Length: 262
Image (cartoon, rainbow, N blue to C red):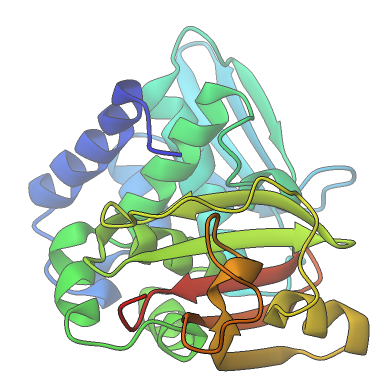
């Protein structure tokens, strides 16, 4: 599931803005001030039925974010997502209502404008120039993703997606719920195909998470065939590493990593 060519545009826009503002450290990425620099007012307010809103009135844009969003990283991502709409879709979006579930939706089957807004948000909050040095030589997994989410002030899922986009490792991020695969993203280096079946195999960490009510499961000996097409589910010599966490919003999130040759 590689991005379409049009999805390069939001990334370029974000990088241009980071360069213009001479941002050199994650602590300098103050999304409210970045919006103000662009003439966009951001306000926190009581909201019912949505977590963010972008409105254009007389040529000016305003972003509202639900005041009682619990996690600052989610609030920052909502603002960045709506700022993406302001910059990328001046004629298509005059009013945009956003929920956290939409902002957290990384499926490539949704509206292209929503994908673009998410990509802009990820790049403005985690610019490649700052993000890449922090993942080079580091072992993939949610321990790293949680660390970076704290440093960049964003969500773990957004970090995982950004990692997939920039890592040189062969890995895939998979979301599943109720035993069914929902969406996945592969790294550029990933040279395998996932199983055709949408059902999550019983030998996976994702299945263990959901069936046993666990929050985290990691395995270095997950049968390659439980995730990958063309491999056995019983051969203990053909294994992948899977690191999985439970998310109330997604269900199971699994990072499957080709750590050793198979």
